[in-house]
View (spheres, rainbow, N blue to C red):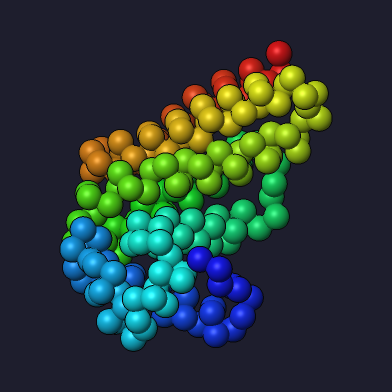
Length: 193
């Protein structure tokens, strides 16, 4: 995949592919989509598709990260300190992301959920780790602790919301948020030791 993503033609083609993919996922569900379906709707050939993405899973990964980043960047608006407010924003972003995926993937929502977990957890990890090292001038040996704390926080946030979503949201969102924040705040405290 040696395409110049800054080239306007490449960007237009990439957008065509992504929009075709989202349209197809909405209609058919992820499992039923083929690369041929995507190329037909995007009005491109297979070689063009493969110049941008290795397969439909790579395309899904790109869409996951881009859509989550859009939600996150709109909600955070420059707030890059790790505190209760940013944790709340992160939780709300994941909840909103699930809502968006559910509205797009009406066909096969349950089958796509396991595919997005690793990507969203990794995105959360990156955001949290960046905030941790920014907030705390960490010595080199403390960076490993920060990585562990970021891992625990990101996977906790994602996995709790995932379980909540799979169980059809058995408790109100505000209660979920306060439970997660209470748990996460304890993890943040371990960095101060």
